[in-house]
Length: 116
Ligand code: 5GP
Ligand code: ZN
Image 1 (cartoon, rainbow, N blue to C red):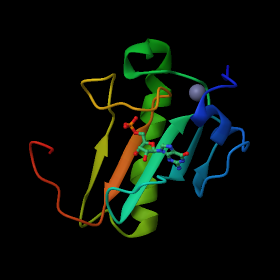
Image 2: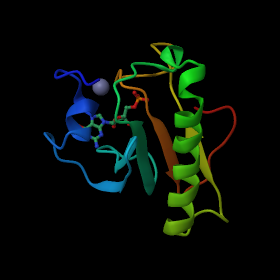
Image 3: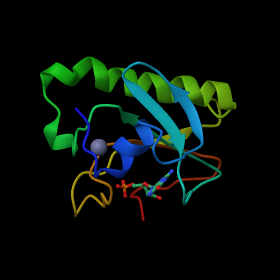
Image 4: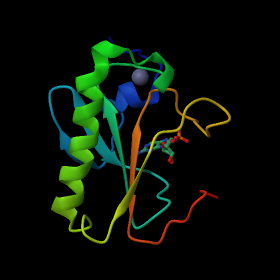
C-alpha cells in the first residue's frame, strides 16, 4: 500500500527523483538529500509503514532484508571494514521527520556514543 501524499512513497514510485543505490522487490535505497556523513543512504520498504512502532512479526523478514541490504551496500561501497552506523529514528523524540520508516546507513566519519 502506498500513500500519495507520502514523500518516500513518491520516491519509491519514482514520482520524485532520488539517487538510487539499490532497488529490490520489497525495498529501495537512495542517497539522503542532506547527508550527515560522506555516505548517507536511506533504506526504505516500498510499502508505506509510518514508524518502527508499525512493524509487526509479519515484517520480521522485511526488517532483516533492510539490514542485510545495508550490509551489502557497505561492502559494495568499500566502507564495511572501517565501519558504519545504522540508525532508525522513531517518532518525535527519536528525531523522525519523515513518517515512512527508513534505515539510515551512515559512514565515512567517526561516530560517537551517545549520538549528538
Ligand atoms: P529522519 O529524520 O526521519 O530519521 O530522516 C529523514 C531523512 O530524510 C533526513 O536525513 C532527510 O535529509 C531526508 N530527506 C528528506 N527529504 C528528502 C528528499 O526529498 N529526498 C531525499 N533523498 N532525502 C530526503
Ligand atoms: Zn510512504
